[in-house]
Image (tube, rainbow over all chains, first blue to last red; front, side, top):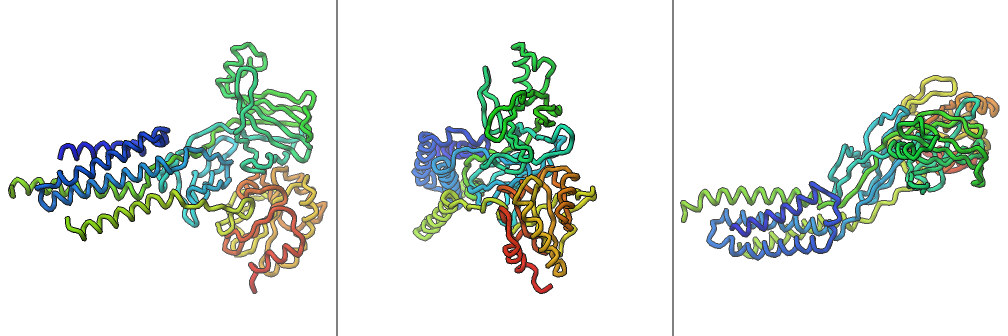
Amino acid sequence: MRAFGAFAFVIAAMVALEIIAPGKAIYHSGWYNTLIVALVVILGMLVRSTIAGRSKFGRWGVACIASGMAIAGFAAVASGLLGPENHVVIGAPDSHVPAADFGGTLAFPSLRRDGTIQGDVSLLRGSQATQIGDWRYVGASILSLHPRSVVMIDAGPASGGSLTITQPAGSTAFLSPVLLMKKTQTLPGADLPFDTFALPAVHRIVRVVYFSAADVASERALGRAAFASMSGPAVLFALEDETGKDLPGGFRLAASGQPVLVGGLRLRGTVLQFPSVEIVAAPSFAAIVIAGLLALLGCGLLVRAMREEPASA
Amino acid sequence: MNRRTLWIVAAVVLAVALLVLLPLFRPGTVREAGPGGLVGQAAPVFALHDDRGNAVSLSAYRGKVVVLNLWASWCPPCRAEMPDLQRLQTAFASRGLVVIGVNQGESPQRAADFAKALQIGFPIWIDDQQQYGRVFAALGLPTTVIIGRDGIVRRGFDGALTIDQMRAAVTPFLGGA
């Protein structure tokens, strides 16, 4: 009985680890899954010797625990070997991003200029909306939110007013003043996130490079004069014409939220935090619930059997 | 455990195995890209202002068939489409159709001047944050979305429509009302 209990406990612990600390590469490794399978096989082999001489409740208790652990182990191996690799879904505010893994879409909330986020990230499947919260176990995946820096753009002519901002074809949202900064540009000494937007009304393309507060501090430490008065995050605007040619005098560094005039335009880039969704494979939620219930039932039956067995022995 | 019990256990294990494996092999549902992606879902409602500064919202148009046209003054196809949208509004207003032009990202003054120059009589809203453009996954401008009387998105179109295409698109949702 002790060996059976020990093997069952190890299987439960290995499966639980995939739920408590999801997304580790180890869960997709061959040896980890082979180990789970081996433990389940050994547990199965121990069933016959464990139930020998036990009462009816004892035999059923052992069978329930073994079945539960087999189901949990199978779910963990299926997730580890067949589940998708970890991936991050980045969506613009108010956008709906297809989430094929779930047969639905991820709906992202609104982002105000002051940085407040209105609403939650939700998984929409048909008419059903599931709020993700900080994290949520859905089917055979765990979804969790991770804030990332985005840049909200205000643009207009130097004389006042505002201009429509569009983003390049294939971006997450064509009509969005929020740049998601998914690309990386290598500048001397640093790889920095950047993004691009267009101002079709004035035939301009603007490249925006993001400097985090740490990047600004390191530039300041290097003695770069443009960063001397800055302490928080900053953005660099670089203007191009519609052919992609740099405009003379079209470069300007600005602190987050500070409007600047450049190339006849008034530009402001405000660095804000907006959630992305990390999706990692996990053992099927339904299978884990069934396995857990079977294990609980099995433990209950064993306790009852242990109460009865000394009397019947 | 007898043979019957073993069969029951085997059936349960098989059922659970299917439960675990099926989601992993489910083909991904491909959602239509662009403005048609929200068809069948409730139209998102944002608090906006019109070109005169009045607070406006889609929720005030329940019971109407709404043609929501996303546009900007710098967009030549938007300019070309506007007179046809006005004709559509005039032709079907009595049957409960409302055309709303939602300017994407420009100033109220610029939008108002544009509408005045083209003698547009339907409401012009200012979506300075381009929220409708994002939520309808606009691929470009103009983008047109038809919302039923129940507030559900019925159709979505990328690019300019002719008056015949507009008529054909809205007629099924107007009914005999």
